[in-house]
Length: 400
Image (cartoon, rainbow, N blue to C red; front, side, top):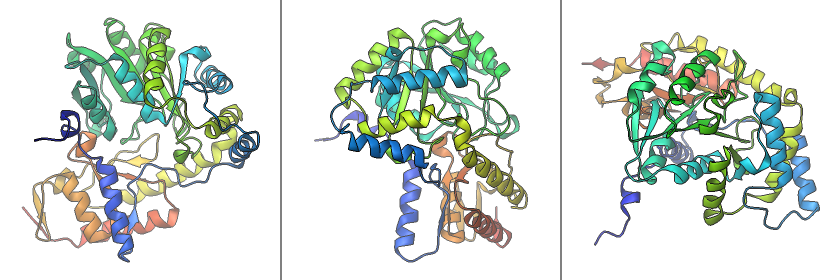
């Protein structure tokens, strides 16, 4: 008798964590391997945020919070959304969750029925498709290419809509591509979605602050779709607070109530000390954290130059986040040193075993011909990793 639910059986393990676990195993075996697998800032949490957490502990904020979060934190989120994005929300529209991942799940659980379709521009973050599956929905993928910076067009979006479409889920800036949508591009997308009131936009903006080339734009800024949009954000990337597990959603009234209802039955309120620390993070001048963005930009430029020298990599210049997503399709269908490379997952494993560099194959991101690696690592690690990859591929024996 099958013990597992259909829900579990139709899900896959995160390829990101599969590869990071293999890296850990190799390191434990004494192998000198460099991991560029996880999307985690390598900075420590800024002191002003840590001090606020210590104060919360000393002031005994150790009891349950309201399900959607402390009122003063939700007010700070509203102030941030007004200051940085020009969008007006009230605290009742904010739900603070255990990371942005839970915020997305709350929204999907609130709107998706069995068989509903969710549009995902590919590449997409590895968990999106699995989340849709978990809710009984069906993902509809929009293919993009490196030539157009992995961005869908408004025409592609409209062509993907059917009577079963219930949501559009995307990230901007994007994990894994590092691309972001401009004001003009989002306006065109908003004009499409506005014609379909049954569709909810789930806009994952967790990489908002890690943007090197222009001002971040939220699709919720467009009044024609504000009542159809759930904005997802959190503390992990901009403030290096990955382990603190604080994310939030900003939703129209009708959706905010449902999100709170879902969370109330799953986890209740998020960690109280982390909530209080998040207030300090959000209220500080954004310039306080600019040093991290400046360092990421420096690393982006360094790695981009080095990748130009890696044989048969097709690379674009990512404008945001801290990832490269090079097209390695040249190697797919070939045999490298007696190892057949079917797709990018095989290629990522080849690099791990032959160059001692951990990356993530693009299949679970919706593109089997690209690999993702993070440059949220030290400059020396990045220099060494790129040198290893280049030397490995310079000397590889390739057979068709």
